[in-house]
Image (tube, rainbow, N blue to C red; front, side, top):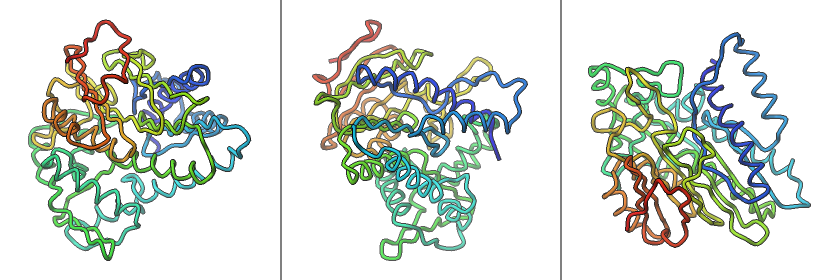
Length: 376
């Protein structure tokens, strides 16, 4: 069913990003986007009219596609390539992956896994198996703070949808009882996945976008692309260089309402930058903000003084999973994890406007906002 609120949030992000793309064309700068912004005024609009208007805007631009309720934007800067062909190849691959991994598509492999919980094993594609296997790795690394069996909890809160609300303690406890990555059984030889208890539900939203970005990189390589930017709901991959120089990635100020408000600039090429933050998707109730990163311990949005974590590494699926993992672990344990993870850097921002970075990042990041301080 068409979700008007969700579409309008995505459109808001999309229109903001168009401005950033224009900026990038001139200076190579892009900003970390968000999966959802504050809702737009929807009065007097018909659902079908809104849906058609959004689709028309996207189709008219080229290189933009929906995936897991986010807009994927691909900008290729090379000249002389058949960009329409590349875009079509990317779109076909993105559609294929969404049809396998979305919980919103009844026939997807993930939906079949959830429907068969406690009943039977489900044979899946190499794509879905790979993502689930990696998710289990991060479940173990984080001791369950990263856990894809949060599907029921995510649905219960409904953050970013028309059904967002603060559930009762009883409802939260009931959903928490179905959260345990150790109860996912996988068979490498037969490519099967089995949820051991009825009622369990997996959700790949915290890792699948990274996998998609990595798959798009493979398509770019195959087609001889040398310079491109992939942005999938704030998961950014800078591919190659621009004019022989690094891309300049604008790290968003997580306390600013304006997505174009940069905290600072990080220069990079052939790397993924993925950010998890309290500003991405949230709602307010009785003066309190509830964001979308949920604790697997108590079932509520995580409250540990962190407002943003950014992970920088070559593999986008790793960056995607690690951004959520480190946010859940908190500042001290998150920093420790990344310092011990090869070829990976991180930036943590706390609510008191302090920035903490791993050792390899300190010489590559330029702070632009004097309200924040970099901790030594």
